[in-house]
Image (tube, rainbow, N blue to C red):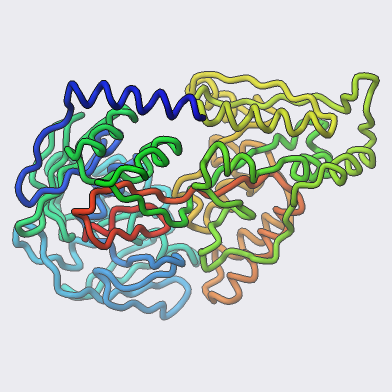
Length: 491
């Protein structure tokens, strides 16, 4: 790590002599992003940059607070008169071209997804809608085929924004929304320019991590979020012209286990793995204390997070005892069993796996590492061709729907992300009940039981949640980042 920091600083010095970036325009903030948004249309967005920039251009029906509870946005209020009906009452709003936003725009947004006017992966999210009524310009009534307790989350900030009635595929390149920022223009792989009054935000595309750090250091850029290595952040903290804001985030790192593997099918082995892994040195040395230990897929600030689920503190003696009880005693070479862990070739994933390999060796588990470029790696895990792998969930884990997507026995690929083929009839039943339970307290109790059961069964080994790290110029005041890492502070 010391070597990589020296390398970064040497590269930075050389590049600064050559110069990079450009001068600020008056009243403009330069915001560095890793890649261009693929579609500035909230109906068809499929990448993080599109989603976060769209949140500034388009208004959702409801917003989410820091505990992921819903609060008014375009809908100033709503009611659920029965489990198959949701009624939204809209506030006065207008699109950036001056047209009023009405209930017809809301209805069109969802109907255009469901009827194929636009091709959207979000169609499956709204397949439970049986009809949409618009009795007047300010009221929208959704009818459902069956109760859907997650519907408000699926129409919230980041999930979907409202587009103008009649908007087609052209919206993705010339977006017209009703949000706080108006779209001005873009150049693919270069920038997206948004405007609010006399202020502009230029989202400048800088794919290379080192270049992003250099632009911030030189002052030709003002801000980035979660787009630098941990070592770079620590180096830039010492720059007098920069500030670093760190706050709890929700991006979740985990190790998944294949429940069809005869060794990993033993719960004692899975629990032994959990006790053998020491997360703290990885958080400290790999992530420079820019992450926090996880104990659930849901982040700890979520309204449905269960604080009472079992945890597995680092305890090698307990891990050895569990392996003994399962019949895996040390051989002449000290090895009890052999496993294989797959990762992508991304550096931090390989470093993580190497540390886990060393820690498991301490309890008699010999773990082989296999790293492949991402497409090959991902193909293997979708096919179930793994014993263990590590990945992250980004944003998907901010909603309890992740339990169905990842752990219901019927949601194995391609129907979902239950790649380890976990199956527990009680968890299936609780997931199905919680999907339709409209009483928040009853639903929370069901979701808590799901988390407690998962933490006993351990289809995932929880690692950590990454903090949100913002490196910015002192020109920006009041930089506070919500747990989801969105760009809302710009509002």
